[in-house]
Image (cartoon, rainbow, N blue to C red; front, side):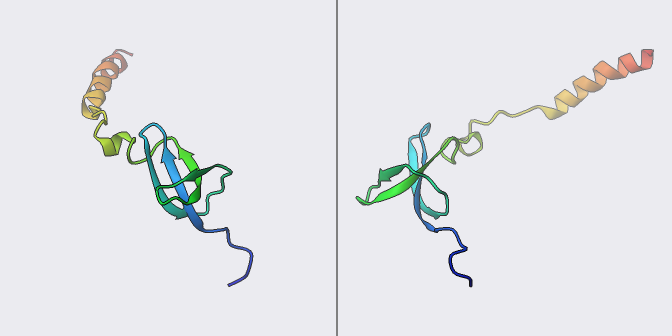
Length: 85
């Protein structure tokens, strides 16, 4: 393996401010911000907009789309107008 071509793989904290959740993992993400973690050590922190704590799919707040009803509505609307043309 070649030296000095791989990114720095280190512990990084990912923080979802909307959900108030943070987790420590290893990553090559670069950031200038740091945070003091629960173990007392200082780690780089990456702020994310969506995580499993705030994503609608994982939280159960998803909207169920009635795609079959929308298709039928489209067919009713445009099949009548296309037959008249």
